[in-house]
Length: 136
Image 1 (cartoon, rainbow, N blue to C red):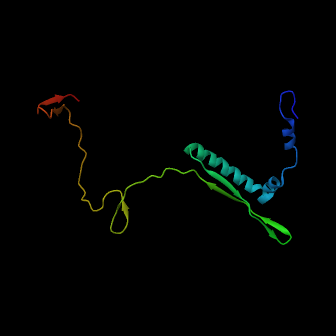
Image 2 (image 1 turned 180 degrees about the vertical axis):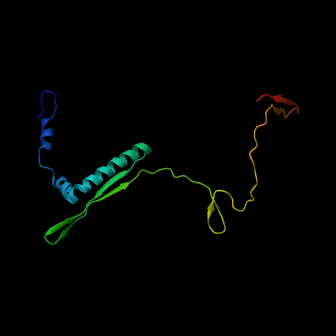
Image 3 (image 1 turned 45 degrees about the vertical axis):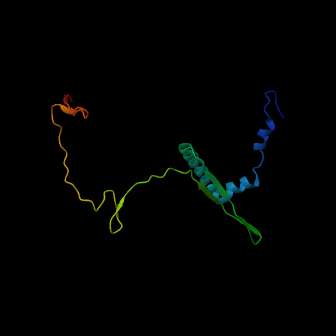
């Protein structure tokens, strides 16, 4: 029923009732560990979806079967994470199948770093061949 503010008070009354059979089972199963696992997985999935901008999925699978006069249940939380960009990098294989950043069959050059030389630079005009000195 609505009060003067237009709020349906019967919705609040529903929270005062006993929890449903499923919610009651969920809280009791494994001393509530499944609820914690679901909560942790949900929060992590929300962070990943927010970070990637792509969808994920959280699934709770509850097998239910007969076991004599009782019912046996279990709970399995499955998370489908949002896809992430895979990086691709190039490597060079050697004869033994080991991967290297540098080509293992290429000769190495003994290159050294040269310090800067004080003075000006020379620029060549490729059309006229004229050379000009430019200050650094």
